[in-house]
Length: 394
Image (cartoon, rainbow, N blue to C red; front, side, top):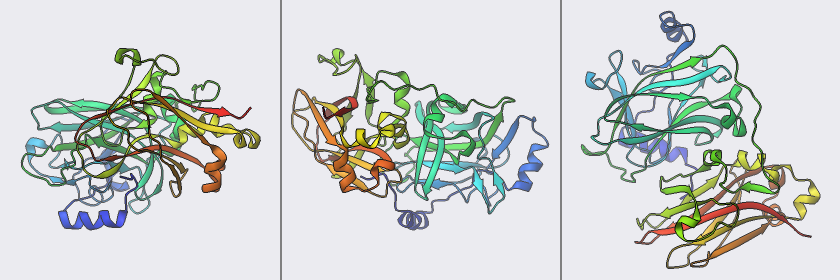
């Protein structure tokens, strides 16, 4: 299922289901008043006390679920209200850092040390939420993610401190133009809220500032012709697990096989949900690919280069793993069918000029790389990915 959401349809769903969308911060005059009672290095970003704009400007993806105002004091950390979140489907929600209508602009994160928020988990089990930054919201329903961090929510109130890591953020984003703060919960694919479906309560989001600005330089280095080979600890920040499947960097030798490059690879376990939907199970972020050698090729090098990767099929059947090359704004794409062989590594090579021919302008506007797979089986399937790289004609 394609990650790009059709916003008009989402609005219809919101109206039908009673989903509420909310703002990320009070209007400028309220915010200034709140700051009078705060430390100089801290700014109240959202307290969810008022409907306008606190519950007006949050963006949520289609099928996410519902966000609404809560007045039950058990689930309020400060004040009289909080935000109730019912993430029964899949996708994301984010809080915009800019609003011309309500007169605020918190897009400059060069001095932001952390984002602090309070979240209540009423479940009896530990749950997960990922918090990160929004960059390049080039459509109402599309944006580049940066610097995501997973938090464990214990039962009851949790204080989440999301610290800005400039080394990770600067690879794909500019700290001077952060357009929002996103949250992603484990997908449930239920799409109906009941008394037993998970819910969370959010309150008191603050931006905490530091005196010195973050460095804007990136210390990341790529090997010769390397795109992603899963050997570096930070690479997990630049691929997307859209559907929350079992996906992690492993040592293939622990599974009885050898990596094709180095000692590590990425293992994916496709769930046995048989929904009948095509799903974008794996994506390498476009800004990261543009930082790699692929984004720095001369015209001559581009004309002789191949985008290559290796796949090990640990399942009992062969099936189509569609490789999709997108342009930078995800407005065009080039697809090819790939069928990883059972019980062995299969190498796939795509000539860059073939992509350019099918999608003119790709050379100057390289975007994400996606693996899309049909969710049509009642058994789990294992894929291991390794060594995304460039190869050249001699």
